[in-house]
Image (cartoon, rainbow, N blue to C red; front, side):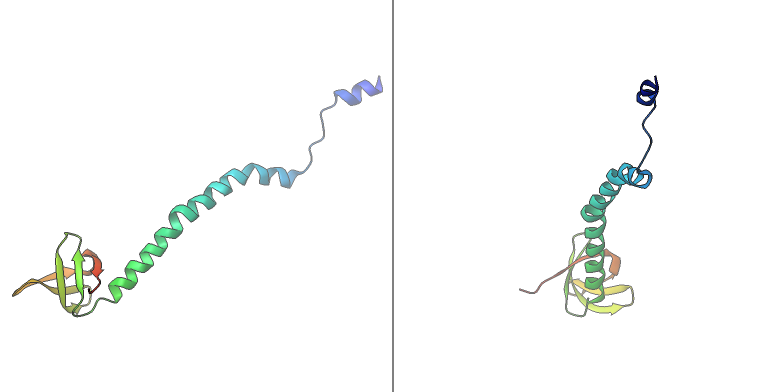
Length: 104
């Protein structure tokens, strides 16, 4: 009779901390994949853009978010005075600059 009761008893729970970690392992893995696939490249892109805008200087050819090509004439804080055609000067926000065109 004693053997029967021992076999019918539920198994003792063990590995309390390890079992909790195993349950959260998929969530941790998803976060790591999310970090390396989305967040990290986006931060690198933001750093690159910030460095590009900080390096804008007189004579650079730029492209605006509207698709205009212009030549920088003066940098005034968060704005740029640029020439888009002969005798046509415009003020452009630094935020509107999408790229600095390399000289050919």
